[in-house]
Amino acid sequence: MTRTCKQKWEIGQVVSVGFISGLEVIGKVATPGDYKPDLWVLVQASTKRIYRFVPHSGLSRVNSFAEAVAW
Image: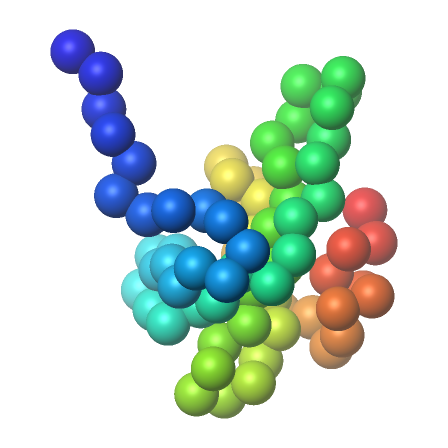
């Protein structure tokens, strides 16, 4: 049996991470070859807060898009 993802992790889509909802995907940093999960940049429309999300590593609030993509 295969599981299907309930959220689309694509730029422009709105997703939820844990208890924080309404996060729009605004960027992705692919990590080919190092076997780490990709990094996602998210913004919460209601507060304009920017977050960096790495699956299995967590969600962290950052001050800018540039800070979010700094790996």
